Structures are given as structure tokens and as C-alpha cells.
Length: 276
Image (cartoon, rainbow, N blue to C red; front, top):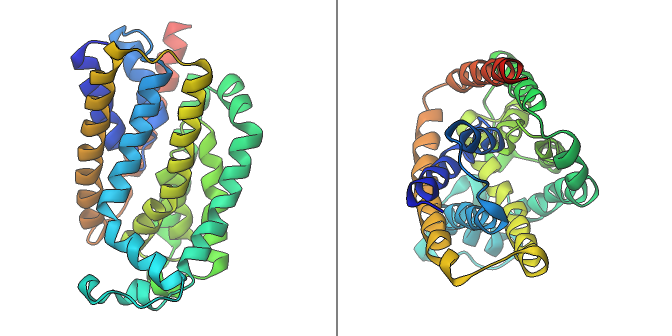
């Protein structure tokens, strides 16, 4: 695979996986626009691992605190205080429960969704529909609750929404952030919980990908450098995007992402009609 394709797709994955604008739509459209050959199963799995490393690196201290609190252990003094997590010791088990809907949906419907719904019309429609729901959540929700106030009901609501991300164009981060806003979380908290919730499901997808490579893949020594570069670039880009987005949402609304989704959705549908 050409180096420029590796770097462009890895950067694109790192950006679009965490911004609420649909990584699947961008990664499907980009090779088509540039006339690139399909990057293959192995590279797709590498991007999953790059995404996983992003959330593990950026949220390492959060995850350590969540695990320690969830298991009833003493929080190391070196972590310092974090009332939003320390006051909600059940958060670990809430995340476990919230991961189940997407896990079940993935096992039951992933192949069906990818074969029957992976079309530009579906992607464009979901970009627009979720964008409109995101606008409604931005416009009408209160945006006042933080992580320490989250309940099992909040987490399950967001977890069920995450299952919808199987549909191309939905955006996992977009639908889970929107669900968080609908539960009156503030914007930064909705994004932070979305990223924490992504960790187990992305890890599961990456591990399943390794099994798929073992069964159906063609991992050759020539591919190793491209995969390594893809993982590293995705991980670094993802960490930067997470930091920038969380800072942005502390003082700004999600309206720019709504407008982008609407415009991109219309563009994809129009392009599909023109190429039909």
C-alpha cells in the first residue's frame, strides 16, 4: 500500500473516530474519491488498534481510577482527586452494562448491516438524521449534569444508542454523545463518557479482527511496516483530537458538527445520484 494512502487513512481514522461525524462514511468515501484499492482487512484492524491505543493512552488515569473505585480499592495518592469519578464508584459496572447492547447487536447483526446497509444512501441519510437529533439535543437539553451524577439508567440509554452505530454513517461517538446530551449531561461529560464507553467495544472489535486475520487474512512481512505506521499515526492523531474536542466542548456547542453532518450527508447522497 502506498505510504501516502497509509498516512491519509490513519489520520482520517484518528480524526473521524472521535469527532461525531462518522468514521465509516469518511473511510468508505476517501478511497473511492482517490481511486485507491481497498486497504484490506489487515489495515482496517490496524486502525482499530490505533483507535484503542488512543483511548487507553489518553484516559489511562481515568481507567485506573474507575477500576480501583469499582473494585473497592484505595485510590493511589499519585492520581490526585477527581470528584466526577470518585463520587461514582459504580461507574465501572455501569460501563460494563452499557457495553452489552452494542456487543449483542454486533454479534447478531454486524454481517447483515455491512452487506445490506453499506450504501452511500444509507450513510448520507444517517449522517443527516443523527445530525438533526444532535441539534435537538443541543437545543432542548439542559447540559448540566456531570459524571458523578450518572446512573445505570443513563448509561444503559447511552449503551443502547451505541448499538445503533453499527449502521454506517451513524458515528459511534456522535450517537453516544447525543444520547448523553439527551440525558442532560454537559457537553464535555457526554464526550468523555462516550470515549470511556468506546474502550471495551473497540478492544473487542480489535481482538475479533485478529481472529478474522488468522482465519481469512493474508498477513505478509511486507505489510508489517504499513500496519505499524497506521497504528502509530492513528493513535497520535486520536489523542490530539480527543484533547482538542474536550477543550472545545467545555466552552462551545456541538452545532459545527451538526452543520458538517448535514452538509456531508447531502454531499454523499448527491454524489451517489450523480454516479448512479
